[in-house]
Image (tube, rainbow, N blue to C red):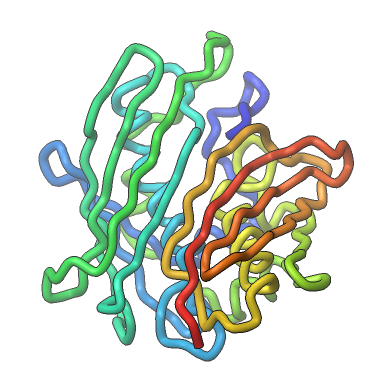
Length: 264
């Protein structure tokens, strides 16, 4: 969503980053990119056995972003839009595979999509993402082969529930806050887009006491959150919610999300 300083390649994370703990692996299969991750209790909506759509969105962003690197290199891509829709069949899985492809590549913007699948190959959800190239030539994308090498094996395990791990808390009906720390930063030293999805999800759930979990989330990113915290406010109606995420340090809007919930 935001560009790193020119001396950074855009993929460097702090030692205490939560992102490696999501245990995502990625491999190239022809023109496709396949991501796979374990579904741990710490990644699920509390009280359910279904992965949070915000966690699935974080994984999708990482996988789909590599299509953007492949298509737009050496220019650095940033995420414009990201969405995830999980089916009831996503419940009870111990692993999820994401099979992704490039839908269209323009000069500056690309569109991608993904199928989430069970270990047996059953489709359990859809995802998509749009990315654009930063116009400044000083910003460079990381080397794709090096990134794939790092994603060749899992690099950590999430042992604490994701919201607790990143310090995301519900602060009232329809509101949630996420501190801007190295735990959630991307290589640009701003809050990772998937982590903004977590605070949006928490606000949406806080706005709808009758919801058991979210099944869909769509995010449109406006600007990065560097100083923070990221403050999310949700308005829910009939199982749908609209969420605005702001950088509390400036009041600027960072992202807009739309969610759909499953009743308890």
